[in-house]
Image (tube, rainbow, N blue to C red):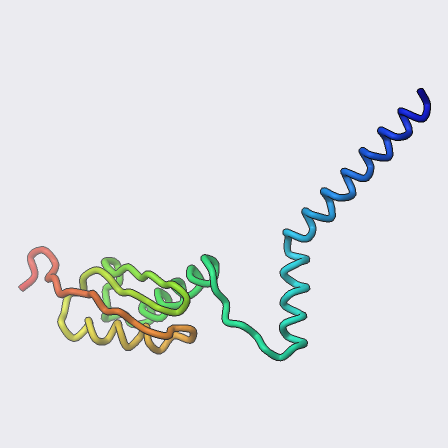
Length: 125
């Protein structure tokens, strides 16, 4: 009876230790370890994935927002591994190319597909 209880306690402890180790490997500890290994080898791969795509989109929106003459409210940016697609409307034809140039100037952008169109605001001439 005592051996059975001890055995169950040992198995339970082993399961807890294994699950904690697995959880830690899936968390930031593993990311930090792989990042330091990449830095040590001297070959840093470009950031990919959803998180990197969202960060690139935010950088592009911020760059466009610095230009007050451009109304960015109707512009959507899609980014995937450095390839950027601009959709939506601007109020002047000159802004179509300007927005594309701004996006191309953001670090991490490898290509820009410009699908912007010109649309005057309501009541505009």
